[in-house]
Image 1 (cartoon, helix red, strand yellow):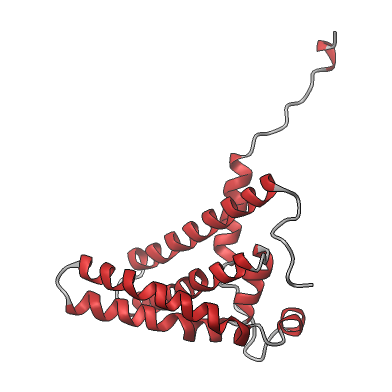
Image 2: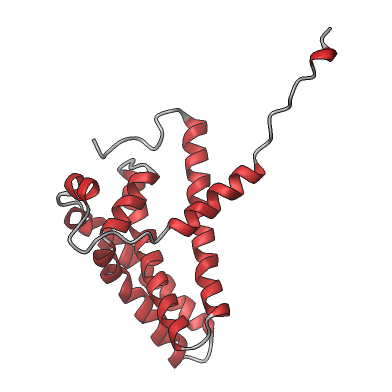
Length: 179
């Protein structure tokens, strides 16, 4: 079934899965920031808006999926397979952010308005999740009409590389040091 526990392996594996998710989302956010730095102008702004749209939508639905004990692999595959739905869901947050950042002098106003709007988007995601879950088993196995986009591929690859680099290497035992 698609509704499986995060790991089923206990508290430590569940904690590891959540740490992995936090690192993945942080790297995805860093990618969004890098787009602004390396691609200034209209194209960079368009790519950043698309990525932010998916980030806001993922944040909103991630709370629902966590409560349903969906594992991260399922969440990412489902999200990437239904990218059009989620881009439509996340776009009001991005449009509101763009509007407030251009029409108010202080970024604090923009952040404050987003802080008030985000819980509303999150509650909407809680109610809208059934719409996104229609035929989820079939869509996850064969893809959707619009096709799948590997939105989190780079962030996922970077997360795996980072964790592999940070993990302790097994020590080789020296056969001559036996007692």
